[in-house]
Image (spheres, rainbow, N blue to C red):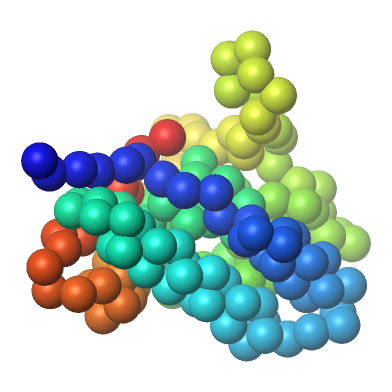
Length: 161
């Protein structure tokens, strides 16, 4: 029987991602340190799924903040106040959209239906120009393929959740 799951908790068994994010936000660690913790967690999760016999391993279910913000970044739908000038959206713009910074407020958050899960609300208007501004989905797909054995299929969950 072929098996698949939609996603997997991303914080880590000892909340490694939470601590890595807080350290990065406080300026105590680098973007490379944050990315290393995240990559190690993703690899560990994919290996666990593979070892458990999951046939279709999901990719692009990981997020530093939330999947709606990830999709907003992928589509380049960055509000003008963040002064993004195009190209790949980096940590500075991504986290400014999520948390704000000294000069601009964060994007609004709202609850997912009646749960306690919040997500960033995209700010779309007729003037919004879309562009492919985050290669996260493709990068994580390739990363998952490299981690998992050839006996498993990797699926991209670009718009899951």
